[in-house]
Image: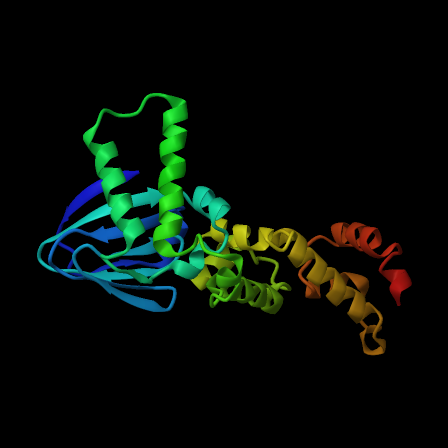
Length: 262
């Protein structure tokens, strides 16, 4: 989606509650077209962009923005699925100021102006071509489309967020009410973004929680001081609310019953 915007932005925020409520997790390339400053903060970074400058932000994380009595800016909005498929490390580029002299940014501006000034595209092939061109240019503008060695040297914000998600799960897996939505809200992310992060590990949220619970239960069953606890008590202690389900999953995972583990 391409758009030309104007108005007052004294102070704007996007909080964890907003992310949880609307489910919007796309990306926005914000291009300042006025002589006033747009300031913001996201992903632990602060940016301040003047006329002709830009910054990439996402609706999947908490955001703060400040402006003036009158602002003008251009939006290039790209769905998360499209941009992360093209550039898996795109989140490393969030909140970085992109200078007005960026050649790719200049080309993107002119290309967007071309699309906006003409008739709406109707041909599916042309729509696909335009979409791919814009995505490719966003990658060049932000520096996400670089050499593999360059990308490997980035700070790894996405990796840091994954570690934060894993830490939350590891610290709360025995809570029967743990959920991807709850973890996402605590971290100021969208639930879909959390699921995307975990997908990179090839283990889903529910599978990870189940494995941690089963390993915890297995450890407790094999310890002498836990012999005074019934199997049902251990199941409940490790986060299972259904003992029959626990027994089935335990046997499937380890090849024997919980009782046999003692």
